[in-house]
Length: 252
Image (tube, rainbow, N blue to C red; front, side, top):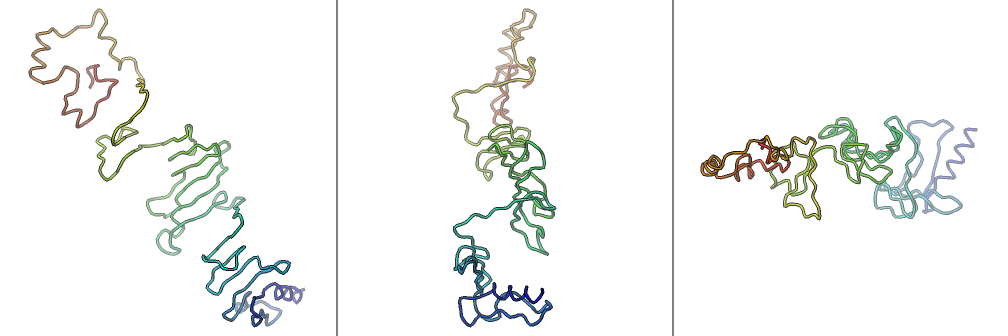
């Protein structure tokens, strides 16, 4: 049986050059045996007499091409990854240095089906990667929606965290509690400000029992402070911005 196996392997491994040979020294495979050529000759893998895979002497492997220009060169075909593995779904690992910095890779791209209804591409960071590890740095759901720091995007783009639109080298964000900062402004057809508590909207100033500031006091206040009561000054707006939902409630 072993003799037949080695005979078949010898027939499979061949080269375009007539001088190329594949030899097996004995019926037992040892550490000195290999599948390939021992001289400076390319190795072709054929089916039905046609070379479908070529291993060049520089270590480049071509599938569908006899002249690969990369470690793995696939031509006129599809590379498909399927099935789970101990680390999750079918995936690719990018970057890192085995035995060195980021030994398990810098980035991973995985197709995950771990949570029903949340299937999609998980862009993740492996253990010991630069900047920390974790899942769902970006997530492309089967629905076509994109999530940042979430595997459950509910809009076309869902960001679980702060978002900056602009140049981070010149933009100063004075308050990190805000979810969105736009550098040069927003052009839109409609803006709607919703409040989570009716007390934050100043309709109560029209109530019959609301105490208005007498005009002499108002005049004095404006003369001394150079802005209306309960309205932030220009200096405050430049420094902190202005919340339009509370700017007239006395809490600004």
